[in-house]
Image (cartoon, rainbow over all chains, first blue to last red; front, side):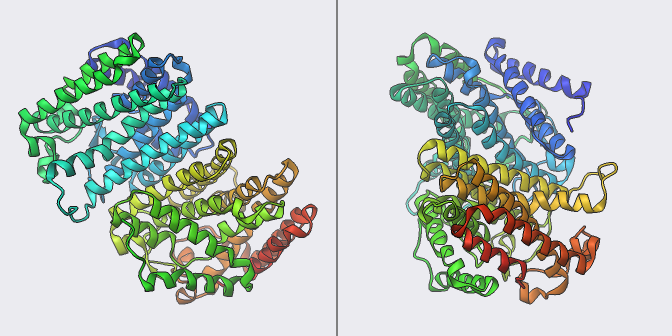
Length: 314
Length: 314
């Protein structure tokens, strides 16, 4: 079932980690990505999956990537005094959900993208039917992973509810973005933009933080702080993404650049200008820091990560 | 958000129930479908969904249908002494998963079907992007429903694990069916056929029974009996489906008939002949009855349902 991993494939997670380190500027912040990838590999190998489906899922979920969401889950767990290993299953699950969303978003009927993380998108690599089914399977396997590997069941149910709430809001965001209904009466472009971003990117990043907090045994106050942090970082991350789409090349990003403008999508640079977008990034960075203040030194990795995300170039 | 349901739409669930009653031959067996539909309507209306997504999900999930899986969930709950209302949330969730699978299976890149339950398929009705996203959302909303509305959390986690295990095996079955890998060495066509059917249809029907059993507080022995029952009925159901595909018209079925033969799919009639398939149906009907024997009179609705399924004509 799980054939030996080829040398070429083994090298990918390392390349991904190197890319992450370059992006975030600090090895020690992104080192936990290796833990998450190992857990994900083990989980996938433990399932009874046909080989072609397993390879498709591996191609999408273990492709080089920043692993931002699982890193947020691990650091959020640590920020409330939890141990890294308590949050690895949740972190692996959130990365699977993220990977599922990329695979379906790239489909011809959706964003119709050929390039993702520097390689052909899954439907280009393995066909459209497999991309649809592998996406579905990744969603299901993420839920199964949380329920099977988090204990006690009460915590598993709570973490799974966070994961699926984030996932569902993300899907709603994709509907707003891809098959938009007529604008809501009286809603300004800036408000509409916030609503799309809050759903499409923000919700799963928020969920990543909340899942980590729950795995670390956070009380209500700490959970609320990490929720605020996640909301600020999630929106900030997407605004940086919007900026990179207009300021960077496809080759540099490893995905198609300039496609937002090409499709007349509502983006921060389009609505607020480049300088206005940069000011908003700075405002959100401060809001994220304020949210973390009561958590003290254990939240330091989250602060450093937030700083790196504000100035990332890919 | 949830605009008033049109008269035409309201009439559909009634039509579906009438069709179910015709199919199964007994009103009292299918009356619980109304409970499940009402719960599903309420759940969908309670979510913050954009109107176009909500309408797409309603179109697919509340279309006329047999509601076989949720009815199995409710009757399995009753068979172990549980109350109907204890299993309605689980039943609604399993119908959502079933509806998700139909929507994605019908997509152009998959079975490319235009007709489902007597109406245009969702991608024909609302576009391909919406069909992909509505399917994703139905999967996520089913998980969220179980976690939000089943109590205590330990039971919610257990029921959700059953649901998602069934869902994942179903997706694997769809991979076997739609993007088949080379045949496994030494596997006979009859064994391959059983493997595909066990995953594609059997796993979710088995899960429907197990979810009902768990909601009804079944002990290990009763859970095992209902698992055996679900496995027998699930395979029997699919063999009947294979037979109907060759013996009935598209108009009668409300979905495209004759498509298995047209696509050279492995089916029971193709491998075992029509008479051989009928013998297998009878064998499975008896196996299902044997499994129920220890449960006594509370399992009577499941026995009657099983009999009706063996001789259904749509």
